[in-house]
Length: 469
Image (cartoon, rainbow, N blue to C red):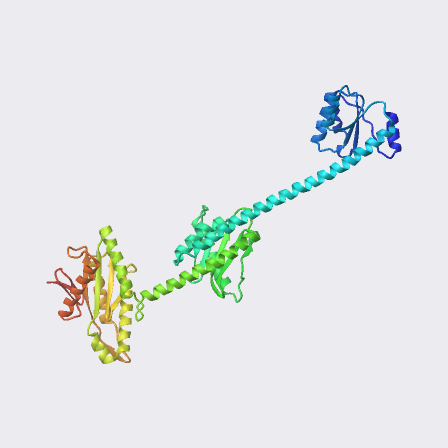
């Protein structure tokens, strides 16, 4: 082989000669196989060693052209060597020019093979990119579906609590987070939603921070129009607005290393529009409902709204077997007040009496204007004796209150009728009203400025005294 080596060097090839070790594949330990273009193997090597060498060469992704120089015992063995990766087999002795031609042809084939492999690698890379794009598109499609579902859910209710609950239940399916804080400007409070195990003090601090941030952000002359990623991506603030009207603020917090990205920011921007509209619609509906249920003169519940309250409390009292008391109140000689001082003064008297009654009862009690100069109070979980104490307090405050028309004092008294359930003759809310009305009629018939009980021993009350008849 020395003559062949000298010849190849003379033709410009860089040639190295390596003595064959006991295990031919151990050559890889001393040679950088990636820098070798052609390998000429001695045909006297045992066939198993040649096959092992070719296998090791393939495992290292080498594209070196391998030529076997020597006799091959039979055609089948030659075919097996060619299938295993031998480029050509040269019978010894061989013309040096033929060796050169085979090497140059092998290098051309190797160049084509490398080009094919490069194309294959590019195809693999392109396929992987296509798979990644497909996965991203699929994820985006899923996100859009979840986003659509969330937006639909938000628009299904005109109740603010239901809207916020729908947000808490579905938002995590679109944008992962650990804590969600919702600040509503009109309520001036923060709702906090989380499944994290955090102390009450920690959640209170988060709520206070959100309240302060929301107030400051919404009071700015030109607040940001879209989501803002803060604290290195661990938080995102989403202003809620309908046109130029500022509704509130959504704040999401993450504790993991994964930060909020542009894609999630865009998704939250889309959610913010639906959420803002849902909240504002619910607020408008609530305002309309409040106006529809309030008496225009006194701002108390009107008769229709109050009847719903009584019906609810009546059923609750029956279910829990508790007492329910109703007080019907009439302003004594109210027509004479209107005739003497005018309707404007009469309206003012009703307003002031409504305020006195409202301040004289508990938060759980409900006061309403029943019609004209009649007002009514329903007292849950209250018996006759307790209702009498409340009625006495109201009557005394009104009797001692200084009603004025300019500099002139107007003496005002009231008559009151009280009814309680359960009672044998009271089966419905209408029965309860009827009983209280009968008691009120008795109080007015007996001279007014009195408190009477219906269908019970009559009780006359004067200046804090209770006299049974």
